[in-house]
Image 1: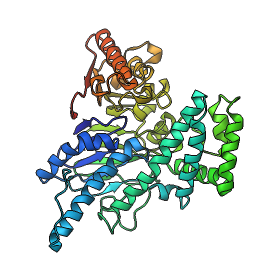
Image 2: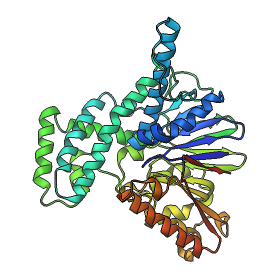
Image 3: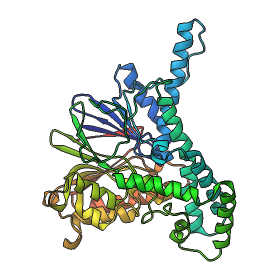
Image 4: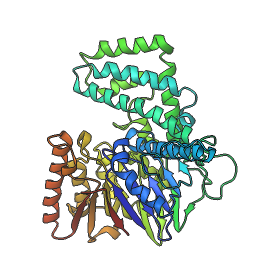
Length: 433
């Protein structure tokens, strides 16, 4: 199994290749990194007549889905060129490289998760974000940024579904190998079967029915409580009235019945599609941006937490190593030989405190160490999707990543050869297990 880790701006973009050549593109990162770096690399597959069996979109956040949208838009441009050429009315050849053939998309479409209120949810998020961003309260501005990013990602998610549809690119969505009947939302089910992709076997470990039902109920209850356009004005007034005295985001968020983050993690992140990937005894856990409680619950429900813990070959660290998504309890229950950190320093991710939690779970005090005996004494490696030199000079992202690089250098030195690290200075780096 090989994992190609791409420059993906603040997001995730991995290309997973099985020993027999089957391939899965795991998220697409941001549109700028897809257009500037990743699509050139993926186009090399087209020139070698190699397809991507599936594109997997963990959830709708821009830093995961907008790169996939850019890839599909490139393919649409080429399909239109082919159509006009066949009709004898040729147009100029596209200036973008042609993506590889895509066999299918795994993507829990926003409208399928939320229902027919998607447009209204987007409108309400945008209205709330604008008000929150106007305040001088740093915490409320942070909530405004979250709302704004979700609002921007919704139309991109809808476009992905539209482009993949039967009347455009004709890319099957959520059609699993060998499955019959209409496509379904991808989630843990009581009778779920493992998913073969070449020599790899995938098992869905999240989201569960409860997470998706909570997501749908939360969005729609929040929306319905506003009573349409009159409610939008009331939302603005309510937030404005609270700006001077509110410092607890959950107090504001709870006004809309379910939209408040769970321990600081948004509902779309909690609904991330997650897979355990297995091949020849090797295991990779793809976590999206989910939160530690839900990841552990999914692993337990699917039987992977043998004796209450698991040691993996590879862990894609959830949500760019945000402090809200990985805690000491998770690090003690889930360990790996290789840890992949995606993100470019935006929002302070990967956070040094999370890196330290993982390090301490392997080389810290006895009370901090992983519970899985298979991890004891094993070497481990940190993989990073970018470097400080790839960021805008003088930017917060560059400063964050420079701090990460310096901190990792210290940890590697004090580990006495147990920890090693790799940073991605170019288009991608490849991890082989």
